[in-house]
Image (cartoon, rainbow, N blue to C red; front, side, top):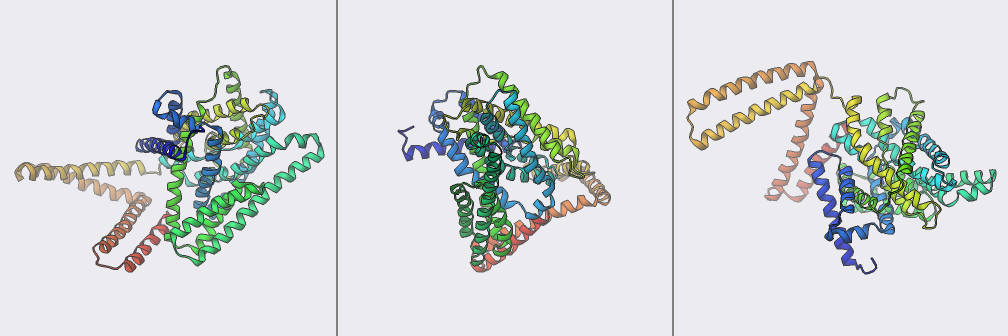
Length: 525
């Protein structure tokens, strides 16, 4: 490790990016959740001796490297991207379940897992509650990638994403208190309880103040510019700056990033960003988040293989059961007070509360002389692997079984008709193509084409009847047409500019108008 220079490190990072991109591309092509594929392939690479990849494995599985990359480089980007895109309206509309899960659910999970660690795993108090804090953090990336592929209700996805954004901040605060201050507070008795509460409030409040202040300042700065490359740079400075400043003040960097990004993406976008600018910032962070997530989950897979579980299977199974039971109690109790919250959603939120890279990065940040560090490391890695692979792979069947991803009425019939129409159109086009290429006579092809055209006419009539019965299906087709027409307009302007028919100023103005319409369309749909 010491012999590596910057050139070597760059080469290793590039190999890692290529691996992550390749696995992600294949997973997306086959419509599978890419985080789970990355973890599994990462674990396989970690277990198999592949000479060309050995330097990558050695580099990544250095605890300090993994911890630095996940917490300092990737975490602000992932949190910032998710919070920036989250409309404040969606948060306020779903604030009850989000707050219940992020605050009540996190505390319940922390307390239950902590005491179970003392009684059932025979951990000391600090060890038990450090493990509890690690297991209270949820990672929505895997489950949200599954949600997108099956089209579940947007509100459910928002609740899970909102819970995770704020839950991560609380879990990190609980982890730091448990790891570094808990014994001191316990020795002080009731006075220690007061100190602990004050530390908790101080860390959260300072994070809110730092994030809120920086988010407001940078939002104001955007009023003086209409230059999206520059404003993308502002967003980078904001996300990383709020995280690092909060951490240097011993506040919650996670909460600072989330709050600053929410303010910047809502208030800043409203007062200082054109829709084109916001779209470009969104696109930049979407690419960044995809790259970061791909690397994170591949690194998790590689990192998991360094643990030795030879004689720990009983402890691991018990720990997994404790975490699952604690999560279940936390979810069902915290949302019990929420009116009209569908029961299937509770089951999905419970089973979809996956553990991820944050848990592993935090446990690797523990001092090497921390009591029980090795046991926590083994259990945390095992729970994360179980969570990502077993829970991650079974969320999709659970969604189908519970009917959460059930299509709207008439939608299946509509899809079948569209598929048949597409087949008939393709058949007619192919007959005409073959007729011209092979000089087949009109008399031979006419009868077949007429047959297909008759079927097509009947199908179109059936579609009209279906649209009358289910008007929302017609609206869906109109939405597709509207979006494609806007893209076509954008390309047409680009073509006119390239052919030097119109000037850059006119092309830019026209394309901004079209982009604004696209942004408005995406907001409404």
